[in-house]
Amino acid sequence: MKTDICIVGAGPAGIFTAIELLKKGSKKKIVIVEKGKAIEKRACPKKKTRECVNCKPNCHITTGFSGAGAFSDGKLSLSYEVGGDLPMLIGEGNAQELINYTDGIYLSFGADTKVEGIEDTEEKKTIRKRAIGAGLKLVDCPIRHLGTEKAQELYYSIEQHLLNNGVELLFETECKTLLLDNENGRCLGIEAEHGGHSISIEAEHTIIATGRRGADWLEKLCAQYNIAHQPGTVDIGVRVEVRNEIMEMVNKTLYESKLIGYPKPFKNKVRTFCQNPGGFVSQENYDNNLAVVNGHSYKELKSDNTNLAILCSHNFSIPFNQPIEYAQKVGELTNMLANGHILVQRFGDILDGKRTWQKELSRSNLRPTLPDAVAGDITAAMPYRAMINIINFIIAVDQVVPGFAATETLLYSPELKFYSNRIKMDENFNTSVKGLHCLGDSSGWTRGLMMASVMGVKMGRILASEE
Image 1 (cartoon, rainbow, N blue to C red):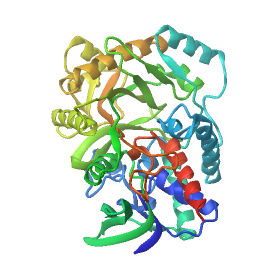
Image 2 (image 1 turned 90 degrees about the vertical axis):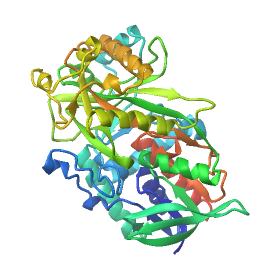
Image 3 (image 1 turned 60 degrees about the vertical axis):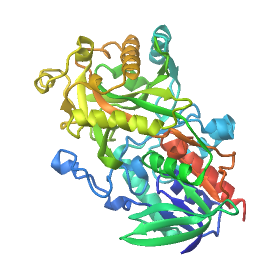
């Protein structure tokens, strides 16, 4: 098969590249290769089974059209200060202009017109004052909340738009490797597999946009083909769950409180991420049966709890260059303690130096929204440095949100973000291999739906300008 542009991964970065090419009137032939299913065929059986059945060959939550975005909380961060380091590559002003433009595309496909957290109220001033007193930074970031179920409807509309405009979508097709002209240092396309058969796709431009799930795979490709890259940050943390009453002021005022701190004694960067008012804690399965925790927030279906991630950033230097593998080992050890499930522990039990027992969870005001999480001891698997950072950060957040560090506050583990391998590129997303570009979370430059989508829009404009 021959095409002008081959995109590996039908997540936000890949599909927004195609959207922008179409908007610019490009005549280039576009093929998108996705190892998961079309969005209308994606369904997590856990709704019926009440526990993860570890779907094969791929997890329906993390793979398929729109990637993990279709089953996430569906929040679009509308500030360049949130979502990774892309502004360092293309400039802050350019990044914000692209966010505003990309937000307009989401609106055109049916995103909710309401933006959360834009009012400058007395409550917001109170929250900021408390954050300053606790040594934390409150990041102002307007949020457009799609909602998990509404996001699926929106991305289905995008999928049909691409199909109706001639974009070829190859589902259940897995990219295995690159086709390279080593003599000229150029990527010629990819080698993929569908239904047990090999497919060669030759392309003028090859775009890798495989998301966090594909970060480990991309790192191996970089090593194999000498694609210039460097180990970056890896985030290790927990998903915290509290009653809605505890988060009431923050939920109503900001919807999502983006707090950043550098707690003693290690002073690593620790931040909140992906806050879900009235949300549900969820499980995702990555390659090698690695179970990780995440959070969902629906537009209509609500729980009595709010969950959010607390992530501790680790930066490694010479001689260590395997941050993704490091985070995976932490996750594997945690999974081992929970017999392949997610581990949950009460914060008070961590401070008391004891494990949590299942019967103790039923006695609290707070009931877990992930029913098959296994009560146990997170500290038996979490690295000491990360655990101390998380504990001290939670205690600091308690000054901003009284009750956050209560005995019954639940911590789920592991929450891991695999975007540590940063591909070296110029502002036009050219890698050290001609004709090869890397986008989205797998590139190490973005984190989350909006910034990955922005990177796709920018890529689409660059390719369209060649015509």
